Length: 220
Image (tube, rainbow, N blue to C red; front, side, top):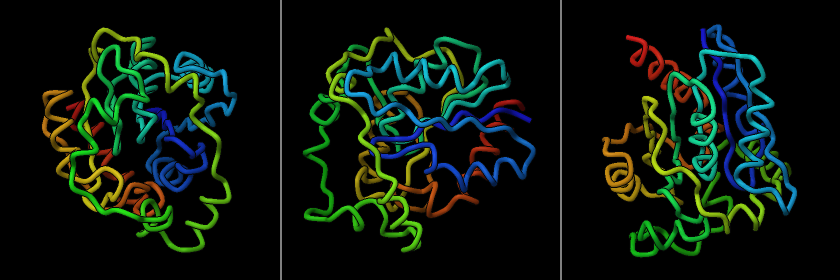
C-alpha cells in the first residue's frame, strides 16, 4: 500500500483525478488529490503548503504532478520523504526558471504540433463527451499570475526516484517534445502511455496500472 499524492494541472482541480483515485483505491492504495487555490496571490510555495496539508501524517508517498502540477510536485518531495516522484505530461521545471518562461526556455514554440485547435480538440479529443463537458464545467482559475512569475526555487530536483510519463496522443505536449525535455531536464528516458493530455480522464485504468507498476519497480 502507498499514498498517491495527485497534483492537478492548470485549469483543473482534484476532481480531474477521481477516476484514477478509484482505480488506485481498488488496488488498496490511499489517495490525496487536493484542489490548489484559485487565489490570485498564491505562489508555488502556497500550492506546496496545500498539498502538505492534504497529506497530513500519511507516509509511503508517491507524488504525481500532471502538466503544471510538475512545478509543485518536486517542492513537496523536497519537504518530506517520498518513495517516488512521477511527472505525467509534466512541465518539468529547471532551477530558477519562471513558469511563464517555461515555454520559451524549452523551445516549445519551435516544436511541430497541430495548430488552431479549440479546447475540446486540444485537451479532450479522446475523453468521453459527457466527461469532457463535465471537466470543462469544472474548469478553475489556476494557476495564479503570482505563481507564473515566481522562479522555481529548488537548486536541483529532489533526491527521489523519478519517472516521466508522456502521452503519445497529447496535442498540447507532443511526444517528441516530451521525450526531448525529459532527457534534457531529468537525464532519463520518458515512459510512454497511449492517450491525450487528459489521460487521467481518458484512460484512468491504464494510468493507475502504470503508476502502480512504477511503485512496484521502485520498491523492487
